Amino acid sequence: MEAAVRRRQQPGAAGGQGAQPGASFLQARYFPFFLILFMYFSGCFTPTQAKSSMPGAALLLVVPSGLYYWYLVTEGQIFILFIFTFFAMLALVLHQKRKRLFLDSNGLFLFYSFALTLLLVALWVAWLWNDPVLRKKYPGVIYVPEPWAFYTLHISSPH
Image (cartoon, rainbow, N blue to C red):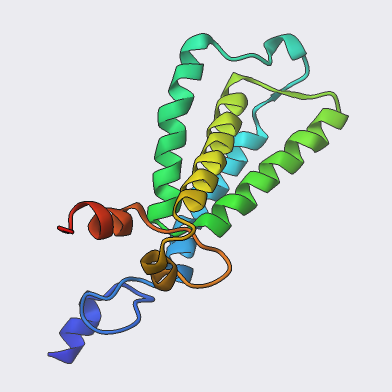
């Protein structure tokens, strides 16, 4: 019976039945996704600045894309992986700018989505910074509470 329970648990899960996977397992699970995004981003440069613009309709889609990444980063607890990817993207932009290469519309869209995500995560953390229950649940230097934890604590539970 114990072998069957162990087989049902996700790799990296600490604890008994129904335990959440550890942070290192979650970050490892999302690593290929962010690596592919970065590889895609590295090909989004053009030698002419005239092609470095984004259509207005694409600007409207940056908001839902940023919200999606915000939810992925906060609920998946993958902030460290996200921030390293964002800084790698920023370093690549600065490096390519020295070569007089500019982001095309696809690169701008991804970069703006990540920048908006970083802003949303910062606002989320600042808003919940002094919440004593969530601070206890998410101890440590990097404090990024999950939206589901906020919902179950403050919205769905009767006061």
